[in-house]
Length: 452
Ligand SMILES: *Cc1c(COP(=O)(O)O)cnc(C)c1O
Image (tube, rainbow, N blue to C red; front, side, top):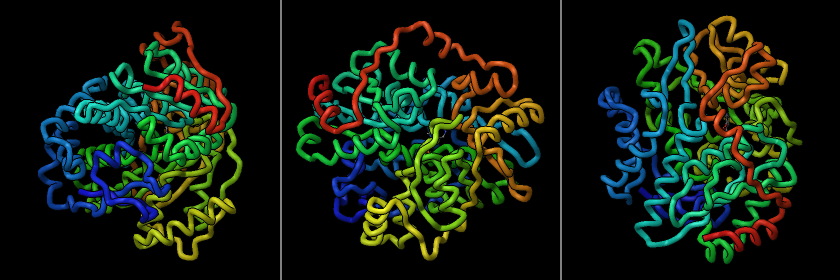
């Protein structure tokens, strides 16, 4: 399988190369040249455990990774998950399910992709006899998950930019209290979008990028999307047969990465009815899916900080398909968004999608409501998914983080605090963070000094 760029001026390249370079050199995002049709395999898939299913799925994409090595990477990636089901599906009501994606090491769904990515990077470094500097920007959970995917791995250093003071205290501790010498938590003076812009500029410097063997780790890496497809498939296979054809996955959304994975799986022939894009007050995607207009506005901090985003990076992948796989059109739209912050789609055809948005007050009241009605404690991101649950579909709400990551919000909503032992242990460790300006020059200097 080869990988092409949404902007049409790179490649095609193999899987390992697309993973290693992250962002395509033409500024676009990598996508598989063709999507496999899984419809004939679904019956056979139904009996597989998580790691086996993941292998069945990924081997169709990671065609240049040795099959036995791939299997080993997958097994090791999910071995650290604390729930035997890896991604357990809990039933709350007749037609209401929660897919718990927070049983990995950093208690958020990003572990699914980033444990895998960390092990793939390690494998590639070993095979090629090279070192790698990994750079990412995070609004909270990506950075923590990326760091825990690469913690202590030989030949790899990881640099994570995050908006200082705008991630939850425990999220910061997950990044800055690892004690690992190959981990650098860079506290940026600005918002997530400022950090993301600086990161894009660093990656825009081709010479620097090659000299330091720089790789991107954030929501744009191809592996993020592919690894995330697997739990949609796993959950779909676990639903009672009579419910499967009517399922709507409800996805708390920021960068559009998670929901895009589900949508791509649907394009591979898995009969999923639809997706709900659930945003917090930063509602660019809600507005897009309800009006057809993509309009960037200022980011406002919310109770669900990992969704405090107004530039939905992965949207470009959806756009590629939406634009009839025409990279010229993708370039035009992305340029217009860059220049004016706005694009109005004449015919925004998003049949499979519905959308909802949630204010902070609604997040609190939904946490309370779900607790009182079902005895279930959900985190503030997941809470957004419970807004306007469909009456005529089977809803599977993706629980993207453990409530224990947001104890203050939960206490304010239901009067008690969820506790998780791995987070308790973090509270007594020293925080080691490096304050930086959101400027490419500053970040490059730091990598030059501390990289491998
Ligand atoms: C990252 C994150 C999201 C948003 O996911 P996207 O892929 O950016 O849409 C939602 N909830 C939590 C807990 C997250 O960490």
